[in-house]
Length: 459
Image: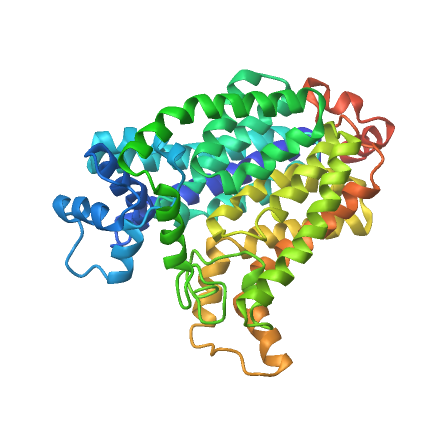
């Protein structure tokens, strides 16, 4: 099969996944009462701010929530709490206030269009980086990531926009095209969800050279864009830092929707937490203990990743390996939901690069990357929840605890395994594949090995 035919097949997989993503996401949003629930979180708080209220005070947001009279009387107390307790940073209002100004009717439709369109475009940009390396594998991974994101579209979670903006910025930086636009995109992504894309920014900062200059310019643009939002929020909410912390704590308390402990919702709903604490807590139930273990494991891995990034100043192919490592590693220590794991689309170019080398590493890259994307996607989550709906809290024995992790909380374990794998590749790589995906040169700089592989594919 020629490379062109493989590219066409890979692109078909991406587009097929995009169609399923849109069709199921829109269809489900028309038949469920929880449609656009995450959009309402940012909508009601922005409306509260527009009315001069404190967007971080649940009581003031609740007044707007009640005044609009949109939610049915059957709405649960938990859902009401979720929609009135805002814990995004003030710069997020840069993106959310315009939609609140339009009102819910137009605002939520445009938000869904923006979310879906951005994620599809991000997948196509990543595809553009992979199409000459491993087109079928990359197309399959991207297509499955999209088709398994319908819940993200239906619920209106802002991770779709933040991660897509970040992916667009990465494409601009790596392709050396529209760099200024890339700087603005990364700044907007950081404004909306810094805990999702902040470590991608850190990669460019540590990588040195032009990457570092772009990271610093991104910080300047973010500061300029964020200043009006900070001043506005501080005028109506001078204690917003304490309020945002209180809102976050209310969700992470025992049994809360972001509680990683065994009594929490991890593994029991479609947008479960995926940080490593959710797995460690099954074995050590004390929050101090499971947090300490998580941070120790993550800290060691992050330290190694930072050292390699700083001293090697990766470019081209090696830069993709570093981005793959941090795309999974950044999910482990902090509050992250499965929606946030869509950042793994940045690992697909690295997976493609390792795949064309063949051997055990190639299969490990495909299995770990594909497994992490699948298990943190909506299709596998739905199946897992249906099969383990009656799964009890683990008994005090090793087998029961292992079964609990494997059956209900496998996402964080796969993210950890993927992080370790790509960090190992990152450490041992000495630039043999340098510049494979760097700018317009792409395949021209691959060298003899990939040229041979292409000839074999043509035969």
